[in-house]
Image 1 (spheres, one colour):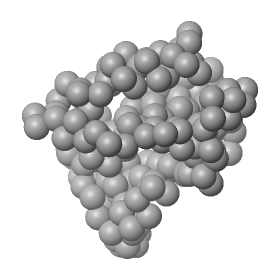
Image 2: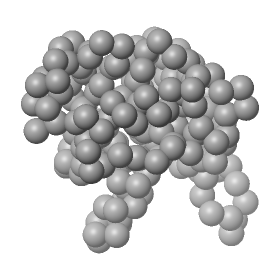
Image 3: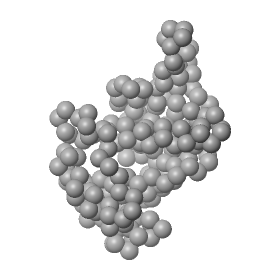
Image 4: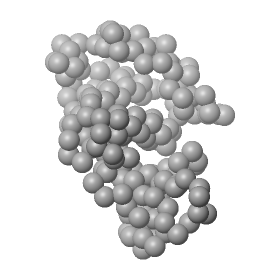
Length: 188
């Protein structure tokens, strides 16, 4: 339905996109009695030469795609949480200066929701174009307009980067994991 609405507005499909997230938990690191720490390794088809490592409540490391090989070598410190891969995969549309990605979010190959990413390409300062983004989103998502993303509140310089996009996807994926855990599957 969203794809149809975008096409009716005049958006042109320009291929597909994929964002994925693998969860690792700290093994030998950390003290007994402390909650486990998590590391999320993410990829985005919009940044194919980068790999993003986001630490739970911490910084985002941007590395080259070989970072995945490094994680295999660090398996004594970080264990991969099996069957816990989350991804959003779908269509990518261009509408004037807007880039819109509509995808299906899956956990372990089971559909869990729909994702919509909207970018206003000429602007790199997200706070400066938030009202414009909201107005555009209302044209095809009238009843599901989000609030200002939390990543905007922690930006000191205001310049938006691919790391900010990944932080938003991680926030969304974490919500999906919590919903799945609440339904009784016990996954994180």
